[in-house]
Length: 180
Image (cartoon, rainbow, N blue to C red; front, side, top):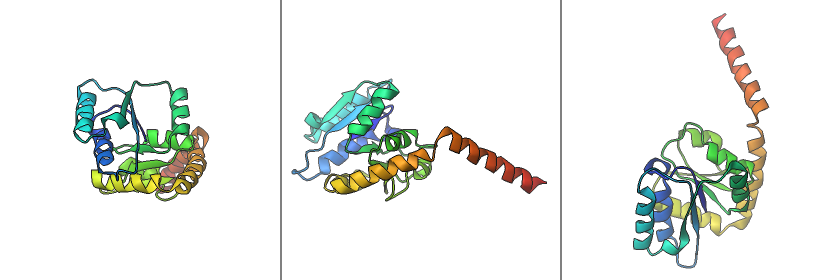
């Protein structure tokens, strides 16, 4: 599993650490946390991982350039976005563009970026238990991951700059016609 972003409670990497501790013993899932915070949050994550006896499967990685991150997403079995709030969900969309299967919290902008059961799976409620269930489902279903990844890449193409500009122009045209 790959988590990319600033590690902080709002972004939810602690949910992934907690979920690892809830997985059955036969699932040896590794978690790469890519990014840095300006606090001791990462150390707290590692302490909690040690308490849950999953410290050997939680890896902190420094931020990487976008091109390298795209390669990491392509190699990942799962990209996770367990945020409590996202205005859009850019990391989830970038992961989809790389063809990655995405697990994301069922919240605001992530709901828009990830089409549930099409380009990824939305997890609700936002608890370690529900994240563990979603992770186990994805790990035990490689065909599901491949299907979601392929559909995710196709969906991400609909968010090109050109497509977004055309949708924005259409929204302005609709607003102007409503005022006239």
